[in-house]
Length: 251
Image 1 (cartoon, rainbow, N blue to C red):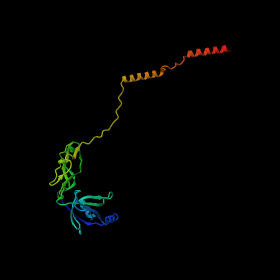
Image 2: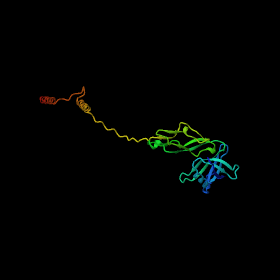
Image 3: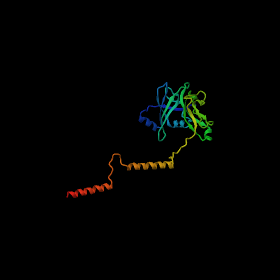
Image 4: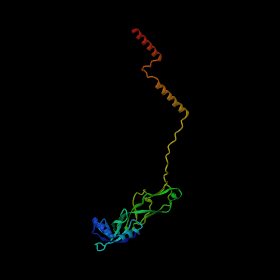
């Protein structure tokens, strides 16, 4: 990776009010840290930083940092993180990680594709980007801006795994070798669930239901065992006549 020049200045404004004033003056607060150094507060020109980010093809940027009037005026650093305002996108803060030219570093590198997968072109599949970045280890000068993978040979249900990626010279790709990076899948069709239509009853089932219904009605009409039966109409009339005769004799 080719390094780009960036000028920075030691920063003394660290409180919230001072940082706000710094941004209004066209500067961006920054910090540089590393394994062998103590973190140091810096500030960089906002316009220069915006131009640097705009012309970079990757999120991994190696900078030749110049800090005038500093004990170590020349540094080599990687852009670690750039914080943006969530609404207007203005750069709020810059993190730099100092590195040594002869010491390997571990960074994430974006994965890009070239070609059209045969499974997409003729098989109706969809190319899925499972991993957008992979972890690599290399000297700062050997860090690639991106890894480009040719997917033309991918058919349906085929994938490219981490172990199949071809790294540039001097670069080691880290991670589980069997983990998929890119894959061609068949899109899952949406199946509409329709309620099952009620099956028509056959004649035999209808007759059985009819018989059960008639048996139920007969059981309800029959008196329970041990219950008194209601008197017949003739018996009621005979009882009434006997009562009338007994009343006449008393008179």
